[in-house]
Length: 557
Image (tube, rainbow, N blue to C red; front, side, top):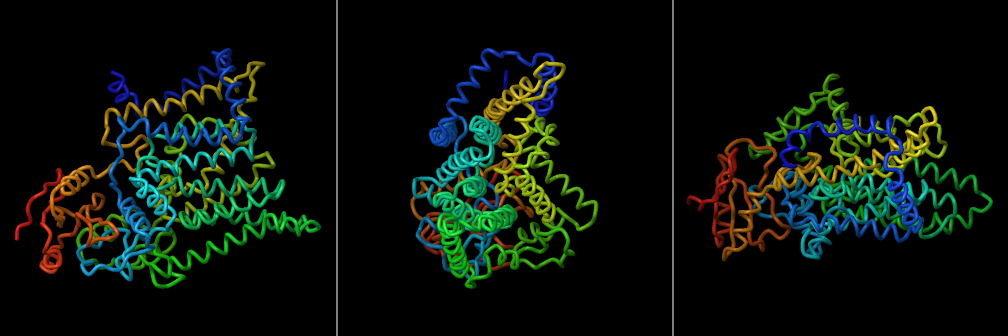
């Protein structure tokens, strides 16, 4: 019954909550004051034990998701990017940074994967390292869960340096309600948590260094910068440039004690950054055979038929060997943004809407009515500047997904908590409406868990709560599992009934020739015999992928 009710109410739930919050906070600001005050005091006492709170929040996030495995099973990958990250994780788990190019790369080529000069993912290595850790522990998704726990722990540690401990705990709790269990950050392989972890370490170390330089804080900042550079380098740079200006200014102003500050902060930080740059140059050299050529840049050069920024003109279409690449790069991708003013306004509005839908919803948008008071807070100048710079950077690029904003989530959380602190003080004719409003916001934010569970119960293999990363290729996973349990080795030739751009099946592990199942692409007009000859000792299957469910059949010789 509840599931059916959610089916009809769900799309309007956030805005219904908004109306109820305003009405209840205005009319009954101290409703349930006795019980809620007790809960707040308990949370405040717990939050004051800062280290314990950090450990508990990390464990709680991970256990909360693992406990729901009977309701929400581990989802198979479904998005192009996920398969590419999984290839990277599998490569690292085998003790390599990249793989030699495969002789049959023409038939094995796929999205977001380099085939030349080496066989590797195009993405920076941080997310792949997390997935490799999970694979070594039994499943790449374990790495996702661990990264989410580490992310929330780092966010709490960061907030403790910016706001009182009880408000820091509230901030991460609100974010947990929103994205901690049912979002694609926890349930897919796209990432988000790793880059957010890096941003939180940087922003948590900064005020501690400014207050009292310690080697440990400099190390945390260096690790945070290294994580950002190897996960979301563009957005990480936007976050770190103002931080570097603040640090240089701070050292300049403390010139008389610069020797101690240099030893405690600058030297450890500089050592980590030198190691980071050395690793990145080496990684680039191994993957692209040029230390200054990033894998992502090489893949864009080989595959992408448009600029990732909004201002250049559309280049001419490229020629691709298979229809799926042509449909994706020459049609779907180019049609997302046609380089005119109306399209620019459209994609810009969509970026802000997507950010608001994923991180805030209607409920957590309410505190920003207090933003004018936050603008007057001197300590909020740096976070506000960083958010403004990030908005400019986000507007300058064509694409946006919520995990692109991961490096600045911690900064955004600081501002959100500060708006709640101001909102808490609001009164009207002597009535503490701010107390009622902030309490109602927390309770309604908690409802995200309830409705996420309801949606998942109704669509266990369907869209994730929040709508991002909404599908896994369950039929591909079922066929792969079936063949994994079938004696012998297998080659699956995937034939598309139309120019599919989202449901891509042709992805393989790092060690292709020793994989139980190898996936290859049927290319119309191309001679498939070299592929069949190369894998002559395998059982060959054909999968037709179209609008209906895929079918596995013996390959017609």
